[in-house]
Image 1 (tube, helix red, strand yellow):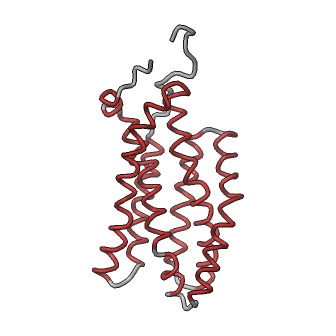
Image 2 (cartoon, one colour):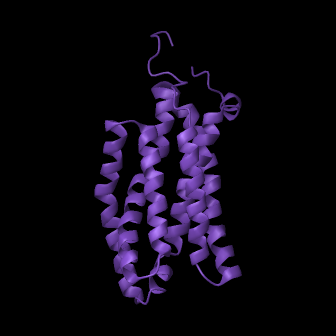
Image 3 (cartoon, one colour):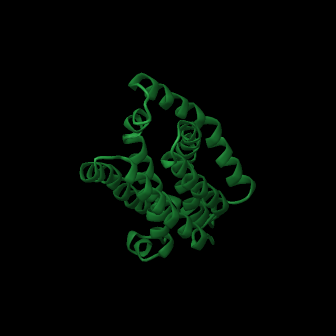
Length: 202
Protein backbone atom coordinates (compact mmCIF):
# COMPACT_ATOMS: atom_id res chain seq x y z
CA UNK A 1 0.00 0.00 0.00
CA UNK A 2 3.02 2.30 0.01
CA UNK A 3 2.73 5.30 -2.31
CA UNK A 4 6.54 5.32 -2.68
CA UNK A 5 7.03 3.66 -6.06
CA UNK A 6 10.55 3.23 -7.53
CA UNK A 7 9.86 6.04 -9.99
CA UNK A 8 8.80 8.42 -7.21
CA UNK A 9 11.76 7.42 -5.05
CA UNK A 10 14.27 7.99 -7.84
CA UNK A 11 12.94 11.54 -8.15
CA UNK A 12 13.46 12.19 -4.43
CA UNK A 13 16.66 13.98 -3.40
CA UNK A 14 16.99 12.18 -0.08
CA UNK A 15 17.14 8.80 -1.84
CA UNK A 16 20.29 9.85 -3.69
CA UNK A 17 21.76 11.57 -0.64
CA UNK A 18 21.31 8.39 1.40
CA UNK A 19 22.22 5.93 -1.36
CA UNK A 20 25.39 7.73 -2.49
CA UNK A 21 26.41 10.11 0.28
CA UNK A 22 25.60 8.03 3.36
CA UNK A 23 25.65 4.39 2.31
CA UNK A 24 27.58 4.38 -0.95
CA UNK A 25 30.65 6.38 0.07
CA UNK A 26 30.62 4.70 3.47
CA UNK A 27 30.73 1.19 1.96
CA UNK A 28 33.17 2.24 -0.76
CA UNK A 29 35.62 3.39 1.91
CA UNK A 30 35.17 0.10 3.76
CA UNK A 31 35.82 -1.93 0.60
CA UNK A 32 38.88 0.12 -0.33
CA UNK A 33 40.42 0.10 3.15
CA UNK A 34 39.84 -3.53 4.07
CA UNK A 35 40.90 -4.89 0.67
CA UNK A 36 44.43 -3.50 1.12
CA UNK A 37 44.77 -3.16 4.89
CA UNK A 38 47.25 -6.02 5.30
CA UNK A 39 49.75 -4.77 2.67
CA UNK A 40 49.39 -1.24 4.04
CA UNK A 41 50.29 -2.42 7.55
CA UNK A 42 53.19 -4.42 6.11
CA UNK A 43 54.49 -1.26 4.42
CA UNK A 44 55.19 0.04 7.96
CA UNK A 45 57.69 -2.80 8.43
CA UNK A 46 55.48 -5.47 10.01
CA UNK A 47 55.38 -9.13 8.96
CA UNK A 48 52.24 -10.60 7.39
CA UNK A 49 51.36 -12.51 10.58
CA UNK A 50 51.58 -9.28 12.60
CA UNK A 51 49.46 -7.44 10.04
CA UNK A 52 46.84 -10.18 10.16
CA UNK A 53 46.87 -9.98 13.97
CA UNK A 54 46.20 -6.25 13.77
CA UNK A 55 43.20 -6.98 11.56
CA UNK A 56 41.87 -9.18 14.36
CA UNK A 57 42.35 -6.32 16.83
CA UNK A 58 40.53 -4.03 14.39
CA UNK A 59 37.58 -6.43 14.31
CA UNK A 60 37.47 -6.60 18.12
CA UNK A 61 37.45 -2.79 18.31
CA UNK A 62 34.44 -2.75 15.98
CA UNK A 63 32.19 -4.44 18.54
CA UNK A 64 32.04 -1.82 21.33
CA UNK A 65 32.43 1.09 18.91
CA UNK A 66 29.43 -0.10 16.90
CA UNK A 67 27.45 0.14 20.14
CA UNK A 68 28.86 3.63 20.70
CA UNK A 69 27.57 4.89 17.34
CA UNK A 70 24.22 3.24 18.02
CA UNK A 71 24.07 5.05 21.36
CA UNK A 72 24.78 8.41 19.66
CA UNK A 73 22.04 7.61 17.14
CA UNK A 74 19.40 6.94 19.80
CA UNK A 75 20.57 9.52 22.34
CA UNK A 76 20.69 12.41 19.89
CA UNK A 77 19.46 11.71 16.37
CA UNK A 78 20.56 9.81 13.28
CA UNK A 79 21.78 12.86 11.37
CA UNK A 80 24.04 13.82 14.28
CA UNK A 81 25.38 10.25 14.43
CA UNK A 82 26.20 10.34 10.71
CA UNK A 83 28.04 13.65 11.03
CA UNK A 84 30.07 12.30 13.97
CA UNK A 85 30.69 9.08 12.03
CA UNK A 86 32.21 10.84 9.01
CA UNK A 87 34.33 13.13 11.21
CA UNK A 88 35.59 9.94 12.87
CA UNK A 89 36.24 8.40 9.43
CA UNK A 90 38.25 11.38 8.19
CA UNK A 91 40.35 11.33 11.37
CA UNK A 92 41.01 7.57 11.05
CA UNK A 93 42.17 7.95 7.44
CA UNK A 94 44.41 10.91 8.27
CA UNK A 95 46.14 8.86 10.97
CA UNK A 96 46.70 6.10 8.40
CA UNK A 97 48.79 8.41 6.16
CA UNK A 98 50.72 10.18 8.93
CA UNK A 99 54.33 9.01 9.31
CA UNK A 100 55.37 6.94 12.30
CA UNK A 101 54.32 3.54 13.61
CA UNK A 102 52.33 4.90 16.55
CA UNK A 103 49.84 6.58 14.23
CA UNK A 104 49.05 3.17 12.75
CA UNK A 105 47.78 1.91 16.13
CA UNK A 106 45.45 4.89 16.47
CA UNK A 107 44.20 4.29 12.95
CA UNK A 108 43.60 0.57 13.59
CA UNK A 109 41.44 1.48 16.60
CA UNK A 110 39.52 4.15 14.70
CA UNK A 111 39.02 2.09 11.54
CA UNK A 112 37.59 -0.56 13.86
CA UNK A 113 35.06 2.08 14.90
CA UNK A 114 34.39 2.90 11.26
CA UNK A 115 33.70 -0.76 10.46
CA UNK A 116 31.50 -1.09 13.53
CA UNK A 117 29.44 1.99 12.78
CA UNK A 118 29.25 1.71 9.01
CA UNK A 119 26.46 -0.86 8.98
CA UNK A 120 24.23 1.25 11.21
CA UNK A 121 23.96 4.47 9.28
CA UNK A 122 22.17 3.79 6.00
CA UNK A 123 19.38 1.68 7.51
CA UNK A 124 18.85 4.09 10.36
CA UNK A 125 18.59 7.22 8.20
CA UNK A 126 16.31 5.43 5.72
CA UNK A 127 14.00 4.61 8.61
CA UNK A 128 14.22 8.20 9.87
CA UNK A 129 13.20 9.68 6.53
CA UNK A 130 10.76 7.06 5.21
CA UNK A 131 9.33 5.65 8.41
CA UNK A 132 8.38 2.16 9.42
CA UNK A 133 5.75 1.54 6.76
CA UNK A 134 7.59 2.94 3.72
CA UNK A 135 11.05 1.70 4.73
CA UNK A 136 10.93 -1.49 2.63
CA UNK A 137 10.08 0.31 -0.62
CA UNK A 138 12.68 3.01 -0.02
CA UNK A 139 15.44 0.61 1.02
CA UNK A 140 14.78 -1.56 -2.06
CA UNK A 141 15.83 1.41 -4.21
CA UNK A 142 18.50 2.91 -1.96
CA UNK A 143 20.47 -0.29 -1.36
CA UNK A 144 21.28 -1.04 -5.04
CA UNK A 145 22.54 2.54 -5.42
CA UNK A 146 24.76 1.99 -2.39
CA UNK A 147 26.13 -1.31 -3.73
CA UNK A 148 26.88 0.23 -7.13
CA UNK A 149 28.97 2.94 -5.46
CA UNK A 150 30.62 0.42 -3.12
CA UNK A 151 31.76 -1.70 -6.06
CA UNK A 152 33.90 1.20 -7.26
CA UNK A 153 36.04 0.85 -4.12
CA UNK A 154 37.82 -2.27 -5.36
CA UNK A 155 38.47 -0.73 -8.77
CA UNK A 156 39.72 2.48 -7.17
CA UNK A 157 42.25 0.59 -5.06
CA UNK A 158 43.49 -1.48 -7.99
CA UNK A 159 43.79 1.37 -10.47
CA UNK A 160 45.55 3.75 -8.08
CA UNK A 161 47.98 1.03 -6.94
CA UNK A 162 48.77 0.14 -10.57
CA UNK A 163 49.32 3.76 -11.62
CA UNK A 164 51.25 4.99 -8.56
CA UNK A 165 52.80 1.79 -7.22
CA UNK A 166 51.56 2.67 -3.73
CA UNK A 167 48.40 2.34 -1.68
CA UNK A 168 48.90 5.65 0.12
CA UNK A 169 47.28 7.85 -2.58
CA UNK A 170 44.11 5.81 -2.12
CA UNK A 171 43.81 7.18 1.41
CA UNK A 172 44.01 10.79 0.24
CA UNK A 173 41.19 10.10 -2.23
CA UNK A 174 39.15 8.45 0.54
CA UNK A 175 39.72 11.45 2.83
CA UNK A 176 38.33 13.68 0.06
CA UNK A 177 35.31 11.41 -0.41
CA UNK A 178 34.71 11.36 3.36
CA UNK A 179 34.75 15.17 3.39
CA UNK A 180 32.10 15.18 0.65
CA UNK A 181 30.04 12.65 2.61
CA UNK A 182 30.32 14.86 5.70
CA UNK A 183 29.08 17.87 3.73
CA UNK A 184 26.23 15.74 2.37
CA UNK A 185 25.31 14.70 5.93
CA UNK A 186 25.22 18.32 7.09
CA UNK A 187 22.97 19.29 4.16
CA UNK A 188 20.74 16.19 4.38
CA UNK A 189 17.06 16.99 4.99
CA UNK A 190 16.09 14.32 7.54
CA UNK A 191 12.44 15.27 7.89
CA UNK A 192 10.13 12.25 7.69
CA UNK A 193 8.57 11.78 4.26
CA UNK A 194 7.12 8.31 4.85
CA UNK A 195 4.75 6.85 7.41
CA UNK A 196 5.42 5.67 10.94
CA UNK A 197 1.76 4.78 11.40
CA UNK A 198 -1.05 3.78 9.05
CA UNK A 199 -4.83 3.61 9.11
CA UNK A 200 -6.22 0.16 9.88
CA UNK A 201 -7.80 -0.16 6.43
CA UNK A 202 -4.41 0.37 4.80
